[in-house]
Length: 510
Ligand code: MN
Image: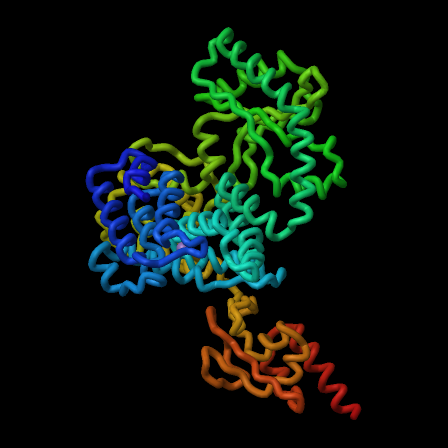
């Protein structure tokens, strides 16, 4: 039986009013999903409940956790948006509506549109918390994917692999990314999955023993060297990322050194380097395999020191050394920076730099520095701003122009592009001011060559109508229809123009 305390226990230092809000959302969601079932036959409420637990694990704020509990009550529980607003306020309603909107975007495996769809997702979510709810929602849906009808399963798994996992990666949420990929892997590439599983099982048996020996030896050495508060752990590489690596290395397992790794988490950066010294003192490192991502983080913000050692009994093992903070960032990424309350309390400064600037633009209004806020007389003083938000804003400081900032905010992802849809929900990414003719040709030249009429959002329009973001475009074709010279003026893309010219030349020949 689901109990609200299971969520509260996962929350970071909840106040009495936090508990009250989560409990209210819990009861409300449970009531409105009453009698509904998942494909698994379980009560529907398990789904929002697990989503909320995932959000609490990520350290999200009480608003986001409550929105997670309520994320399906409008769509599936038939509750009006007015009622949500009355009971839970504008902010929670905004988050729920954002999640519902994202749920309508469907991915149908057109590879060339993957990136547009990712961008669209980010842009449409407007507030990063929407995206994070959507990711945790997807996490639970993937955990229960086996119960979903077969014909839907592969599409959902593919979408997870190509849209959701890369988004989680870009947000630095590598644990979520790895979990999503591994859940999708067997449905998308069943044969490859079996092959990788076999490879890893054989390798694990071999290495497991030397791993344990190393672990024991390390712990003893830490006591001797007075390294306090070190946590030593072993981790197995995620199957899907192992699969990708095997593909790159011609399936030669001997060329992959990080299948099993030892992870050492210590309090400070100084400890990291001391531990590195201890490790290299005990085991010989593989030359060229020492990587210090604490000094130069990976593009997604990942930090750690990696080294690879000869265990002495034939095994080669990767060792990862990092601080508690780095560990939390590595697992949860941006999610660990979204907890406003905590950021204020600890004044913890994010080291995320330019790579995350675009994320700063998607932060909720209340978390935006006053100088960048739309309202001139905001009563939020800059002192109450978490340092990490200020830091993100400072990158802009030299060239800062508030008007420009707001403009960028709106157009960052849409600049020079419009994202339109086929009636089936495929995304067609076009240059600004494209016409339905461009749309038709970007689907297929045959469709372009035979346009008889076009409906945009259900209404017939003329062929020179500029398309807007989110337009659903339906092209009506007729075998007898042919391009005319006028089309050349209406078309914007080179692809369309080329096809029209070809068609006109052919017509002239006949
Ligand atoms: Mn859901």
